[in-house]
Every structure is written in structure tokens, then in C-alpha cells.
Length: 490
Image (tube, rainbow, N blue to C red; front, side, top):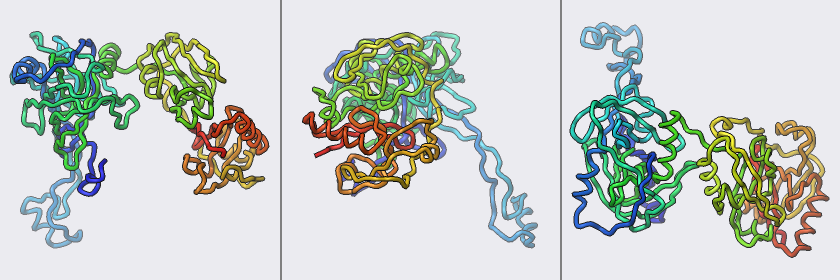
């Protein structure tokens, strides 16, 4: 958000489907076959492209039953003589109304056909909770659709209609080939006005909003409420994105729209089509990005890779991956950030062994990991938050630390035998506070070695200084979640 926007309005990410409450947001994805897409210059006109792809774009109307209060008249105390009067004039339950009653609520969105036998892609939020889904084609024909599957994590839904004739459809292009400045065209049903076309350029790539698998193309092609689930085309007429969200202070387009990249969507749709659900790979590690301070503390050449902060029961532990490993390659693909690893793991086949390259104690190791399925592994319990104990303590590096006791370990819900140092308090002007450490955090490692006593922490600090390093790598736990922090020791 710019300083100007803060003074004039508060921008919001808004859905772009149109419902009874006129919500304004868009979230989406895309499907199966991927066609190469080359960057093209601006055409003299977009008319030929619009004519080519419009028959494959659809309007989606959903119907949902909701409960609403019955009509109410003026409010009077129960037993009032006015009750009979209001019943006589159209309020059968008296002036105070009656119980809630169901009514139908409609919402609008967009979508597009991806196969001649009637598979249609749209956003999950367009059809979520719908009792009925109606598809209107460019020709004006209407068909009822059934839901094949959804993926809330990427806000994608796959629908199917039955038609007595082959349907016009579009293919997916390669979103990785799109460059900032390339021309794109959005087609959909903005504000319920029917088929509409807008054109613009790719403003930015690889945008992240809030999801684990986010890979959005930012565009200035006008996207408004009702465009949710509609396609973003390249100049070859292939879908390179699914219009998903807009940044707006009032629900209207201000030229900042987001389309989920087709290379993400196509994989999701392929799984929904085959299984009716997603089946993502699961490695079983908790990870974080390597910061420049961490790289210095670990004597790394560059701040790249995914640093493993914890290895619970799962495929990674079975394969020998340990906390402190830095994953630099997965299944032959380079890993520079945690996002790289998350996406590669999600795309990898469940149940197959893949090569994982890690950097451990300055040495490269390659391990074979048989991946589990993420959907089955989610929802595990998390230990309770740490409570600061009242035990022997010492001030070190701006931290007041004390050894973890059996009593505190039990309160935290930690496994028997867990050791570490609890941060009782800290100096808010010290670097430790700026790095995000807080009272109640549990330090379990320092310099990639376990610490259970104040003496061991002091020894790790001395070793780090003797090695000529300026930062000490700590592994802390907060609310059961592990995290590495590079703490300055000068």
C-alpha cells in the first residue's frame, strides 16, 4: 500500500463474484493441457481474438437457500392491543414479526470450457454452498451443471455439463512464458452485465496474496465483480490465468487485478478431473527461508535454500532429514526459497521416491524420500504455548533465560525428555527483540547443537565467536512451532 492510498482509502482484496450482498473479490485457477505461449506485440485490434475465444467463456449463476427473518411491522410490547390491528393489515404474526423463513439467493460469476465434452473451470467461491448451478453460453443456451470437485486452497472448482453436441473450448498456455509487459485479454461477466472483454498487460508476475500455492499474474486489464473464474488470455487465445482477485477501495477496478497462473491451475484441475479431489505430495518438514544473517552464521556462500526447522513423524524423518538441514534441490529442481520447495513437493506424485539434496554441516548429501499425501497428513495437534517458568536464570545477549523443567514441559504438552532454555524476559532495545524473539519462547538449539543448560548456550556463543562469525543460529519453539533465528552476538 502506498502512502497516498493510506491517506485516501483503505485498499482491499475483493472477490469478483456477484451475490446478494454484492461482494467484490476474485480467486481462481486453471486446468489440464498446456500449450506453449509466445509473447506478442499489441495487435491492431482484439476483435479477432475476442471472436475466437468468446464461445468458450460462460456466465455462471448459482442459487442457494438462505434463512432470513420474516417481514416485521412496527415493534410493540407483547400483548399490546395493536397486535390484532396489524394482523388484519398484512402482518400475520403481529407487529413483531415471526420466525425466520428460507429464501433463494443468487450469485453470478464466470468460467470457461476446457473440453468439448463439457468440463468447465471456475472459482470455488463462485459455486461454494450452491444448491443449483446454471451455465449460460455465449450463444444464449443454458444448461445445468454438476460439481465435480473443488480445491479451496487454490479457490478452483471443476464443473460438468451434459450437452448433445460438442462444445467449443479453450486450452491452457504456459504461464511461465508470460513476461511483464505482454498483452493479455480478460473475458467474463462483470457486474452481471453479460459477456464483456477487457485488455491490458501483465503488470507483474509471481505475486503472492495469502495462499500456500499462490502464483498470481498481476494485470491492469479491467476485472470487476462477476469476473471471478473467468479466463485471462494471451494473444494466441490460450488461457494463461484465471481471474481471481482485485485490489480496490470500493469494489471497482483500479487497474490492479490478479489471475492465478495457468501452470498452477492446470495441475489442480487435472487431479479434480481424475480423482474428484486434490492429491498433493507431502514431505513432512517445517521450513523457513534462509536470511543473509543465517547464511553468515552457517558460513554459506549465499542465502538460498529451505532451512528445515523441524522434522515430525513422516516421510522426511524416515529418509533421514534432520532439523538444520538446508534443502537445495528437490526431484532434480533447484530450491532457492521455501516457496520453490512447497510447489515442487505439491506437484510431485504421492507414493513415489524422489531425490532430495541437503546441505548438512557444510557437506552435500542426497537422500531418497518416498512422499506421503498432504491431505491425509494435515490437521495434526499442536502443542500448547510456552509459559515462562520461575527457575534459575541468567541474562545473555539481551535475553533472560532459564532451563526447561519437567513441570513446564508438561504444561507445554511437550514429549517426555524435551530439553531447552525458556526465555523469561528480554530487553526490548536489544537485537533479539528486533529479530522477533519474545518471552516464553523455547530455545532448543544453538549453533545447530542442542542446548539444555545456560552453560551450553554460553559455550555455543564462544564457539561462534572463535570461528569469526557475527551471528549465532538459534532454533526456537513458540506455540509448538519451530523457527530458526540468526542472533547477532557482537
